[in-house]
Length: 164
Image (tube, rainbow, N blue to C red; front, side, top):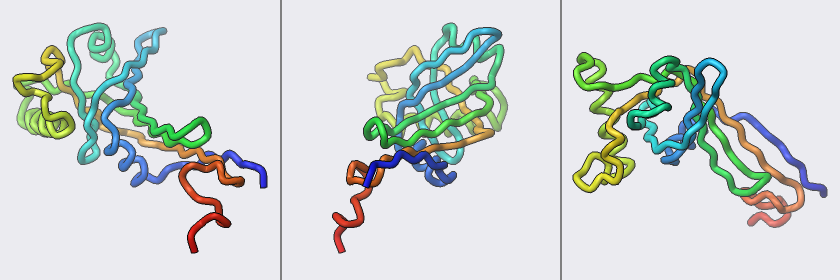
């Protein structure tokens, strides 16, 4: 039997699982005629995506246009991968931003600290990344690609090779 390449949509639960399982993704943002994308460390908890950054061109751009896209992938090989894209508005969580923003800021600190225990500790390797943000997803969509048919699918056994 010939191999067959298929791409299917992930369920929301599968998207949430993939987002929760990883710690580095890509943040895409644009302003006027320029689009950029950067890798970032993140934490995904309770439907929010949390991260931290420092002053620079990315933050300057986001302050002008807070609508972004975020992507995380799990690549097994060229033909077998999962990918999730999140679109939404980024919220900068600055100190003194009111009760609801302070609660979200505390949630971000906890989620990021749980992700990397040295975050916000004395031995934090990136203490300059002190600006916290939260992404409120407006859209989450995922895709799964698999090559199947002759046993090349790395995630599922062929029916004839499967245990009874």
